[in-house]
Image 1: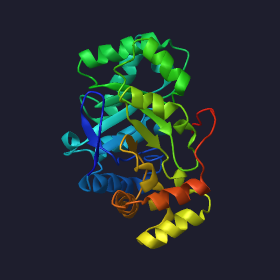
Image 2: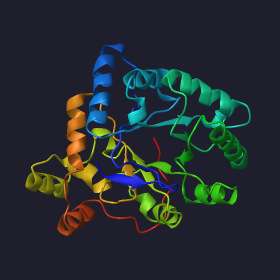
Image 3: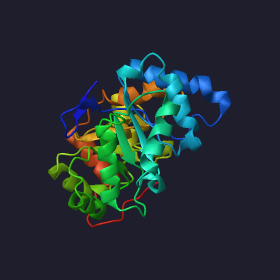
Image 4: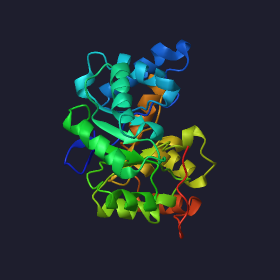
Length: 276
């Protein structure tokens, strides 16, 4: 498994597993647990979840899936912005830990910007690190200006910024990705294949045909082309996990990348960061 290095020199798998909308249908529970465990067996040991997902049901499912393998996993959860202030942050973290059946998170993210001052959230996150509840913290859905404000507020130890990034959502390349690179901070890309709804693309189809792959695998390989990007596609079935894992083995040539650029042009101006 290829790895990406966090600012504190911790190496994590470049291809992880998202869990949005998992755990919400009891009929799929065993299948989803099997999918997560299959991914771990394949080296996709970074798992991302959030207290928001299924109002905690997803964290509960992830906790069950990690029974006996927790120490093999780099576990991430996210906190609601309204829970990111004094008192509530510790409570929210403890609730997530209980649902996940673990004593610590490897990474805890602020899910998106809210009304709580960033300095207050940073203070709370640092306290959770000191208490051993989390190993490090980061943010999600922060645009260029948000990150600059975070750094001014004392957030230089932020581990990552989790954002919507795929071939159809390339806006972050204009200013956000360069800013994070200057701070030696990797990007975590959610919905890296557009939730399985990519538009038709002659380039993706042609490259997929040459590599005996699918357009979705090529699109995921495109996200993973950057050594500073971690991708966290969600897969609710083991076969889908295997498909995602194969994307890591695809080698895109300069000609492939140029063709994909022609179908999905890089940004030439600032655009507002999209989020789901």
